[in-house]
Length: 538
Ligand code: HEM
Image (cartoon, rainbow, N blue to C red; front, top):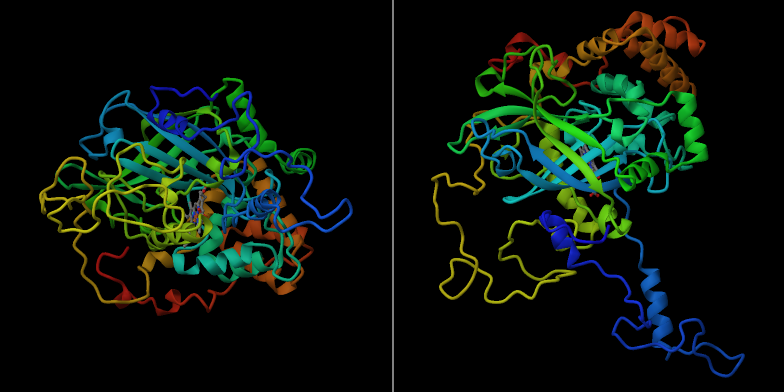
């Protein structure tokens, strides 16, 4: 609805930006000049040429010509809604995050769900990962939890992201397929990059074809940190659990819905909210003490690994309800800018090399996607917390800043924080971690175990879930034209499970595979000897 909800500070803020024509509105130019005719261009004589003098006509065409902005380089297709997060109980023993400080405290949120591979106009029900990005408009600034509906990722290091995305996007010569992963470049990359194997198991499972955004889990994927007021850290993984439970479509259903209603997920979310049938998720955390960082047989900084819930249970900390549809897709859903580095006091990063690269990439891409450095001023991105800084000017500046813009300053400006090293409530301070090491490019030893958790995943599946996974591999690899790629991939699967690999091979008309040799390109593996391990490496 368009009526501002005064209990929701974000909605109240947005009200100031909403614009619709009053009843007796007459069309004007951008300059507010009333226009007599927007249907006929100005011309010389009844059948003569159009005149450059027609500033109204030119303005109308020019604005239209500039309506498009680049779509997101990944996660281009998305659907979003507003709502609130409600904290169950104070977590001040774990984090000083204000939005987690008080039972019943509500924080406005904006959530965007997305597919990864397809362009803005692609179908919803394709086989793909789904983005699950949440912006919390907290009283101490915006916090973005930019997650997916699967708990792991295809790569361990952000420096590979351009390669991965070039491989998963449509083939460069014919721009096919515009949705899904059934093509050579994707499988070529994954088969040569066995760290993707665990994620591939998820991507070939039913999780990759959700029944509805309302029936998807969400994961922060990386290990993050909670930080208390006195500077104590605890590692944390975030989990969203849908109240409706997790549900998927079977493959044939997904084909039908993609054909009959490519907006199937978008429509489902929109209509549920319009009907007052508000989707809800519970936020849970897995917590690992700082001193237990190295007590697992995988590295908690490795985004291709989960922390099994048998080892660390998920503790519920709050719930989220989405209860309001956006009013303008472009203004809100398209211009929303999520960023893993948007964190608030009480939350911090870990040294996961995938996360570290993301912390660079989102702001960087948004500078071009949203046309310059002032996109935080766009209504959907504005914090409800007060903003004061000495950043100035730039494309699209909306603020008339008064006073000077430098510090130190004895005249009039936003003064830098005076607290020194002392921790102060509501002020972000980086977690103080001691780092000691050589400058290197290699990773810790357990980063090169690419198969154990893929096997764990396969072993946890019921018979029918396994059948769906086998059928997915058969279909996807069946679309791959290059025989060597199919063979290499099935060879990798043999390292996950012989039965899985055998059944996929059979479907592809291939002989039962041998286990693949350790791929030569994986530069961490051959170099790994005991004395190469870092102290404390598992
Ligand atoms: C967009 C999740 C890895 C670069 C997104 C979005 C999500 C997401 C949910 C869509 C945000 C929205 O709805 O607007 C993830 C997850 C990752 C991951 C969970 C791994 C755990 C990466 C990496 C990079 C990257 C490694 C680059 C180094 C981007 C870019 C966008 C994006 C450039 C487009 C952002 C925009 O244009 O606003 N990602 N991503 N992502 N992601 Fe990631």
